[in-house]
Amino acid sequence: MGDTRTADETGQGPGLPPVITFREPGSFARSVMAERHPALIQQVRDAFPYGPRQLRALDALLHEIAHGVVEPLDHGSPDRDLWLEWGREHLGRPWFDTPFLWGESYFYRRLLDAVGYFGEGPWRGVDPFAPFKRAELSGGTVEEELRALDDLVHLPAAERASALLHASLWGNRADLGFRGPGGAPEPAGGTPAGGLVADDGAALWSLLPPGARATVAVIADNTGRELIPDLVLVDHLLRHGHADRVVLHVKPGPYYVSDAMTADVADCVRRLAGASGEAGAIGGRIREAMGAGRLDVRAHAFFCAPFPYGRMPGDLREELASAALTILKGDLNYRRLVGDRLWPGTTSFTELTAYFPGPVAALRTLKSDVVVGLEPRALEELERSGHAWRTSGTHALIQVRP
Ligand SMILES: O=P(O)(O)OC[C@H]1O[C@](O)(CO)[C@@H](O)[C@@H]1O
Image 1: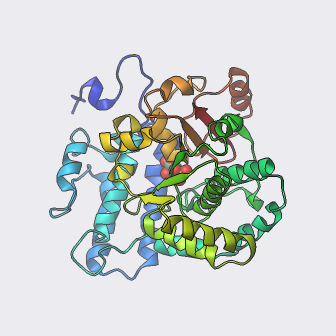
Image 2: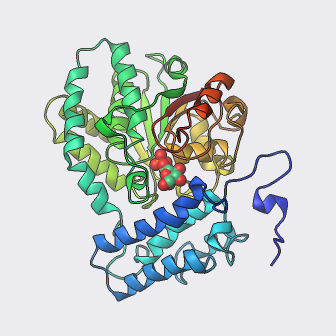
């Protein structure tokens, strides 16, 4: 069957670089659908004593991805109609023909259907990724990272601020989906293996002068080893007057394995508050800030939608417009911010994000092909390195559009 979709529907409009799909043999996106997703289904299958219904549904999803076409959500799924609309151009076609952003997002939604997350039965509301999140939170690495906070207490404020910003940035490398079977190994030792390919850190701090009574929005990404340093940074912003109020945006449901939901925020705050030393003090202050409404948690449905932020609904746009700065964490949020396309690496970050309702800062380790805003010389050097710098999580960036 020929492709009868219009340029708009495929996202391959004139003048724009191609939208990334799973089609390209050897591409990173293809490996996500062909290797990572099947491995993840197996991990979830192993982690729970599911009944025959869930096991059959997981097997069917696995088979559908490899051999079938994209099927709609189950009858009775609360958002079936929404996804019928969102998937109008993709349902009924092979999974590998769908855009990377849409297909990956829909995969996670289908996984929730398979395990009965939205169903009427006993598995309703059981986060299929909870065991992985729990193991990370109670593990030795988090323990060490919490203890390391004691070393920062006596640093001058500016140095501490920079250290906390970098901890939040590199926390994005600790991504459970990324580390799973089929994923690249995590660089050892918790220290950054590459460097920053762009560093607008100074511009970020200049947008948050102490005493400005600003609201800062943080669009969170992963829980655990990423959300903990995010919360530590939030505490610093509130405590040192860089922000008067912080709104932390999380996902309304399980997504991309380790993405933070409200329940995960609660677990991370509990983990902090239960620790000794500076970590415990920070946990106590975060609880207080939440109780006083200085730290608000929101879970807008759009954060699990398969679209770039250019399509954000009016209420979210209005909310972000009122922030002095939106800090946007992680790789997926970056793809949604600039558009999941094969942009030339020197494309202007400022121009691509001009539509965003207010000043925005992206904090991201590189875990997919999309990257913009690089200096031509830096890009050349990276390309010459022969290293998988775009996808291996060894490099990171801080990019700001004031
Ligand atoms: O948690 P992050 O930083 O958004 O990373 C998620 C990234 O991992 C992947 O899901 C691949 O496993 C990418 O497609 C995605 O951009």
